[in-house]
Length: 118
Length: 106
Image 1 (cartoon, each protein chain N blue to C red):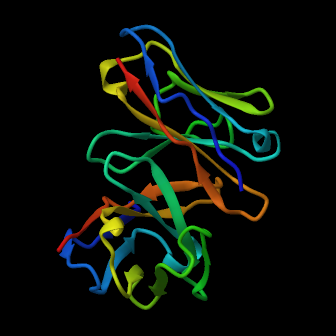
Image 2: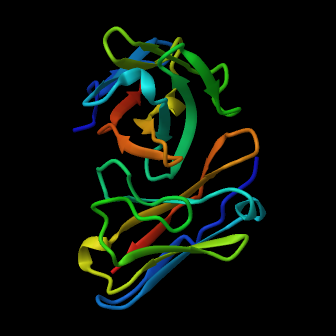
């Protein structure tokens, strides 16, 4: 069974750094790209970017370029999303998702709630 | 890039047919996908490549396309279908785009 298990909820202060994770199991990690999707409270889905876990090639949405860093460690089957300096506006649920051959995301993590507040 | 336009809300009675649209000129060239999201849960893919249904998705979910508008149809709507529905596509540089979402009330 394909599973993406994300790290838990985080509460941070503005200016702090953060790295959240998405551990894949049930398939070959390097075969499928992993994307990150933001959902702000009460709002819709926003694609942030995507990574090829095989070679760590990464593409970002123009809206998130320079704001976050997506990475992966294929030795442990885990993708990451990180911030160097959080802002209150980063408060959101963040999902990782697997890009399947059918052209879109067929498996999703359970989501990680990030709350940034002073 | 471009915007995918969905109605904010659709309301139907149980057993009726719900139709949710998603529009953009680019949909004439790019496939559309539909996700269902219930409160507090991750999205679930219900339709891919305009009209294909993943395994495990009930037959009452179907998709269609008429050029620049794609439609998610739920026939014989059940109470459990109440959720937010998002269409998704890509642009010419493979940037992923989501529609604003439609709240289906049953």
